[in-house]
Length: 113
Length: 118
Image (cartoon, rainbow over all chains, first blue to last red; front, top):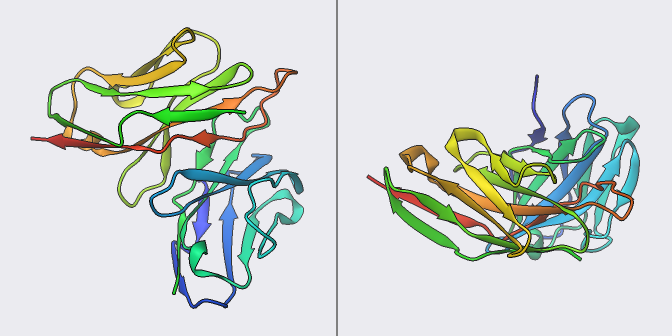
């Protein structure tokens, strides 16, 4: 069984540009989460999808971040325009309906220069 | 509100000696608690989880953790460290809501980097 897959693994963009991160969850997992780790800080929750609906987006830092989950399958996280403080590692995770313990992807390391 | 404190940012042990990574939590309801590990250039891997069953939880690779409600602790231990255990470890809490439903939102500790010396 394939795990959670994230694309790209690394991205380096200039301030002001747009970047889109993609996450493919484990097949059949209704719950999909995005987390972020800024250098030197702990991993922080961004948002939670249940199927295609946003269950909780309380962790989204501002309106430059837009997450979507088309058809309840893969998800994208777009940052537009990117700022220096957006640099970090973005993790995606998925879980079954019970939501007890999630499976994480390898993360996308985003560097904004 | 829930929170997690990992008491050591770095722990260094010799191969073959015991490992102790300390974690204290704060939770409004009945918590689910987890330990995740991240090896260099790898994703986060679930080591073990506590979900209100047995208080002593066994995980992969010889790790175990004990839930102590009176101390609000969930320390991770291993009797004998191996070189391959060198990684960053995260203590994580997930609240169960008042209705007993898990929303799945995880709150991470700051992480503990474990170094294992030959």
